[in-house]
Image (cartoon, rainbow over all chains, first blue to last red; front, side, top):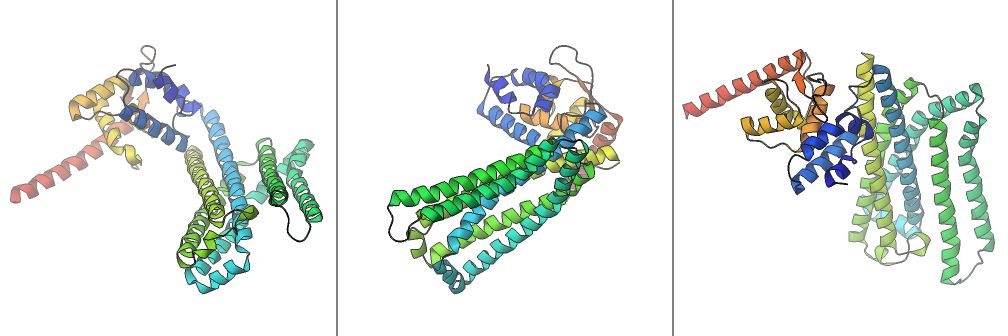
Length: 307
Length: 104
């Protein structure tokens, strides 16, 4: 397969169906260069950000259906990104509950301020997710009952089951955790198991909720309603990320001794834990931003079609 | 008529519209024509990003393909109005610039 054909696969399928053939004729009409490659990659990224492009030739009803499913998928991706962000946020909360970090927050004003911003951002994000997500959850339950598809209710119950599994694991770990000095492998096994179950619980819960939404009939107005909360969630995530980054940089400057120890997650070094948290938050915020732009593009197309 | 927001594709879009003002053309012919009239070589990604936007805004339309991979495009009435507005603005701007230069 030629490099031109490979690069064409970077574009969304709808776009390829519409422009693929003529695009390849033009692309293959002159020798491949690095400039052309970068230009095409940039074009592919742009086409993903604007899913409405390339849909003009579709019948109006088909176009509406595709844009609606793009909007729904974008909202679900934002929800998944938020779930990943929450995991990193919980890690940050766990890391900073140590008394030494609390004292540092009181001693250095910017550290305390950035910590408060993290808390404010977390509350706003949670509230907006609930505001945007609860009506959709109700619609899923209603859809399940009306269509007698009880599998949907089962999917909705997965987060509760995952929560129960997490509580059980916590209880078991505490039960076998003896007070006093323990071998390092024992410590890693206990905390690693807990962390593994926590991550698995988050992934299965988010996946099950997405499946339930995908297989339900969600009224279009609820998806439109969820756009504003998804904008606020993405902004909150960006705010928390900036505050977490500031917190670490200022603390590292003002009290470097905090970063030299092993006060991080699962007994790891503090700086690597903080870096890991920042990286996960950055990836989640990036994913959420890209999905938000896709969703807004689809929303714009739906709005224009309704005029 | 509301002015479509073509984002970073506004310059390539004007070039494509100006090229199509000379008659219907397919992608490769548009690219060659732009290179001749404006001495600008558009990348394939930029060319089709702009074509997709122009089509989305109803400023150009695709005609039936003449042969495999060669689908010509032409200006729509809205595209003609838009291009005329843009070129008139450019003309006014150019005249003003030249006038100021002459006064130096």
